[in-house]
Length: 372
View 1 (tube, rainbow, N blue to C red):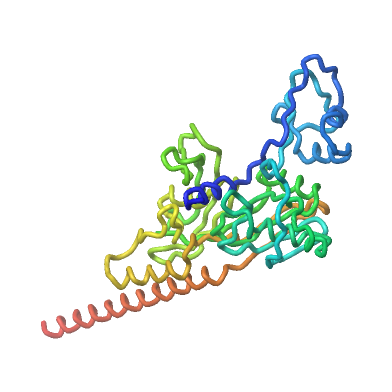
View 2 (view 1 turned 90 degrees about the vertical axis):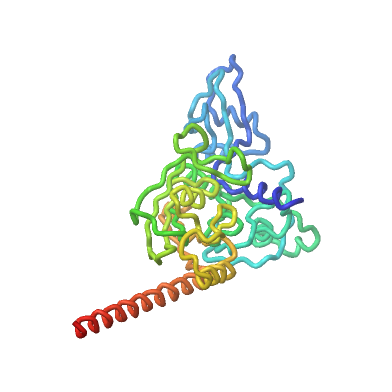
């Protein structure tokens, strides 16, 4: 599989949308019947309790709208079952003993720190070595059985992070948690904040970027903004400059929606591409001087963080079992901190040079005054 196909597979994975797993068109002659009873006759190996819970969590829609368990199905209605992961012909996955950085875990869910470079979900070019393969091992109650048969049911995910983005993720451990969390992502009630190093200094320092996101019409590996809203899906990003550093800025981005590559594309659209983001042009020198030393400095920064400088910093949501609002933060990884330190040192030396230049100018002015 070539690089382009690998990237296309990643692009297909990176979305928080819900997927239709089943679609039922009700017979026009159907007599009114409670939807839970109606579905019990049509869904295999599913209990009535699971159907009712799915209805309560908004995973079952009638004519694209959630309904209550006592809804009466009528002829001609369209019923869809939506879940956070795409339907797969083969639900079995290889469980692999890959270490996970678990920040929190209980019987309902776990919160992890995903390192940059780790693919989240198996795809055509990444059948093994992914986060899901690691989760399959971690969540298995019988590790000894995996030694004999390492293939198990694939664990479900409710959101994803790009391969080369680091940071915090929540993973459900039960059907109830998966449905509840997916519903929160779908209705944008999840609090998500990212830290990004971007080229330039956004003006104003705080604002909102709105613009539908969709596949680029000429390059299928990219997403792009459709500002008129004629194509794509609604996307809203709130941003705030945390630390301006002349040619780059550390920015906090809060997601109102969770579209594929949303922050990367929105920041590029605003004119402040994410630093070292090769796919969207951030691995080119977009701001600064023409001096060779500066170019060498930036190239060294690219070597320190050879991936987009983007980190999922925090995540807040309603716990699916307790109803409590919980919040998690994950500090910046070493490569991100190192590149920030590099830019801070550059900014400091630049200020010192400017101050020295000011002193020289003042000395010359004083000398001119004495000569007069």
